[in-house]
Length: 208
Image (cartoon, rainbow, N blue to C red; front, side, top):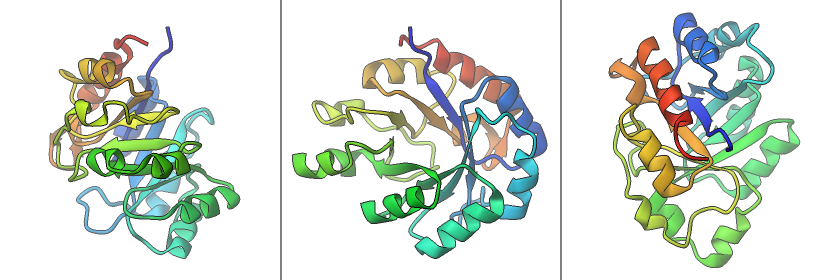
C-alpha cells in the first residue's frame, strides 16, 4: 500500500513546523502571496526550516506574482519548491525548474476540469494541486467534477479538508495526497499542533 503524501500549508511558527515534521509531513508550505492572513516573510521562513530533514519538501506559495519576485523570494527563504497558485503559464513553471526548484501548479478543480484534452496534456508532466474555487477558505469541491479528467500523475487534493473527511475524499478522488491549511487551525490563520498530528494520521489511513 502506498502512503499518501501530506502537505501542511500556511505554517508560521517553530512549534507548528516541528509538530508537522515530527508527525511525518512530506511537505511544509509557507505563504508568500500578498493579502493572506498566513503570509510570512522570507527571512522568517529561512529560520523556521533551518535544520529540518532534507527529505521534507519546503514549499513557497505564490499567486499571480512576477516571476522575478517569485524566484528572489524563494531564494531568500531557502525553500526547495515553488507553488504557483494563480493563472501562471507553463513557462513560469519551466523557469522555476530551470532555476533549480521543484514545482507545484495549483488550479481550482472546476478550472482544471474545464481544460480541453490538449490543455490537460500540456500539464501532464507537472505536479498538480487541485483546490476549491476560493483557496484557503475551508471549502471543499465535489470530486465528481473530475470524472474522467483527473490528472494522471502526481496530484494533491486541497480545499476544505479536515481530520474527519480527508480519508474519504482521498479515496473518492484518487489523489496522490492531501494539502491542508485551514483544516488544521484552531482559528483563522492559527495552526493547532494537535490537529496537524491528527490530520496526517487520518490522511495516511486512506487506502493507497
